[in-house]
Image 1: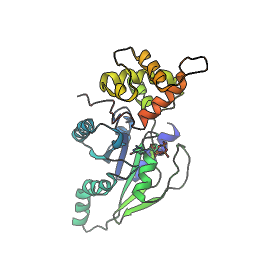
Image 2: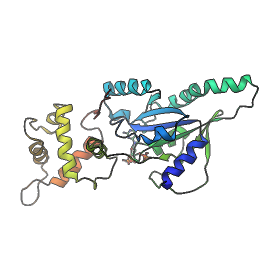
Image 3: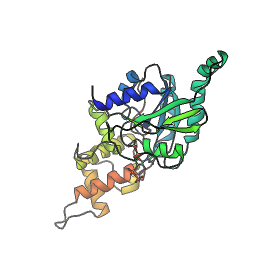
Image 4: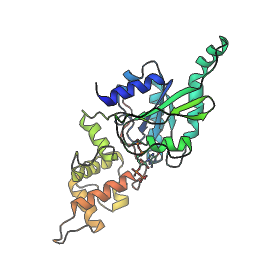
Amino acid sequence: MTKTRRMMEENIALVDIVAELVDARIPLSSKNPDIDKLAVNKKRIIILNKADLADSKKTDMWKSYFADEGFKVICTDSKTGNGIKEIYPACRELMKEKIERLKARGRILVPSRVMIAGIPNVGKSTLINKLVGRPLTKTGDKPGVTRSKQWVKIKKDLELLDTPGILWPKFDDEAVGLNLAFTGAINDDILEKNEIAVRLTDKLVKEYPGCLEDRYKVSEEESPDEIFINIGKNRGFLTKGGEIDALRTASVFLDEFRGGKLGKVTLEIPQK
Ligand code: G4P
């Protein structure tokens, strides 16, 4: 068993609630299915983070999808803090029955415990910092680094594990790998930037027609390769030899997409 997985198991054993963050633009691709096995018997929350970048109609579809799967669902923008205040009431609601039961038996009530988990880059550290109200964890991922566990009081009856649980993304499926690459969840080196950019062009023409035309004044009638070249041309990204600077075009295009400049985009919808 890997160290990361062992740490996850140890941490999950200590909590009542596992709140899993996914990227609202790719809720399934950014979800590690292993957590369902690891967190069996735990109360579960799905947090659709980066909701500010996602297509709100599709976010609603994902909310119903995960609710049907038995999760409590919350949408957040961790950068501004939108939606974060829903986490505490959701935890209370999930723990209500257990607390009532303990109360009825006259037991002393201890605070419920929650941990945040998710693949890299979904916004775990940003969310924890907002939830706690001060910087706590270092942004970055060092699975397997052992240090003592610390609990942070969110309210008198809720404590948060101060370090998030890190899960690795699963991308056996090409479409999942591409979605992770488009949103920047996996390193651009895994696939070539130009390749990612051309594939994203293709996807956007199909799913959000008009979006490239609006921003880059390119015709969407052309092939994805042509569209990509025209984006570079229209932006004036040329090399000394007058060719388009493909790497610069890809970098700017991907940065703009990831930063929401092409509009609110969700790249997958629930399949039932
Ligand atoms: P992690 O712990 O899960 O690895 O993710 P982390 O908090 O480091 O966030 C990864 C990136 O996503 C950061 O951007 C962060 O600002 C951004 N982010 C997190 N939550 C949200 C959100 O709800 N909405 C939006 N739009 N962005 C979010 P970065 O570019 O790496 O850093 P920075 O330039 O913001 O400092």
